[in-house]
Image (cartoon, rainbow, N blue to C red):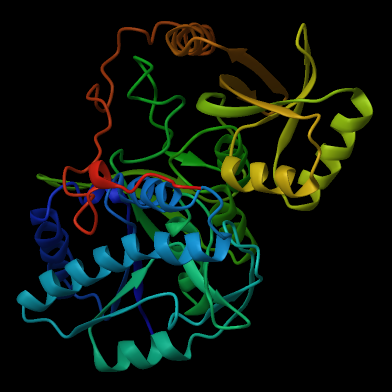
Length: 388
């Protein structure tokens, strides 16, 4: 069965009316000749953080399985709203969540790994409907409990579904039309990269770039799925970057909330690094006047949970901003305590790599926004205080 797989990030749903805008785009795609469509959705911007804040307000030691189930409701709401908007267009549609997507994982709650897939439920839904809405970032384990694939992992869901259905491409829609040489919101003159290799963008993601999830890119490479990065604007679709092959492009990434683990000695640091490597978490060794340490730039929540389970009380955790210069032969990381200084350093590095771009216009200079409607389910201002 031929099906086009599209993923819409949280920035696509800033306002309730945005679900109608996306629904109209899907209707136009069908009218233009698409056979079937699977639309993978993220939670509205800010929803996941709101849900996590409320859960931790109830219990700071909330069980990971309990937290995963709560966070999944953000994507479920988006799927229900988009299903309603598509139905209003008179199109046969249904939504599927983690319980019925046919994706099974291990029980590493917080960032579960996919163990098996079964496309039967999605194929059955597509036979009865022109459009299927799928919740991103969630699956179930062998016991049938909801699991969370990690922050920003709706990309992974979309690529997995494309591979499940035998499709060779997947479209990812976000607030920028593609992959840039730096964050276009922060670095003037950041250049759009028309074509980039799987390995290059996966590396950028592991070091702080947010445009694509690194595990999604790695899965796409393993199953030969081409990723097309796009943006849905009021003027239509803007196509930016194709992810395939081995093309390289120098870049600068900035991770504001990098976790820096300060270890008592080198032996303890090396022990922790082996532990994190076993869980496929990238940890970079650091040594400065603060002593031996590890810097974690992605999958931070999951990594800190692993460290906590290791039970080493000699490890202290701090937060710094990491600026990373990346090229095929270069990897330099600069840790900054001051976010403004980190942005300046990122701009300086980018100007050195791409001279004369500092005054070029960028895709958007407006700061990223959280949806004002991200707390449709809950009011975070009224979150209960922890009584433990």
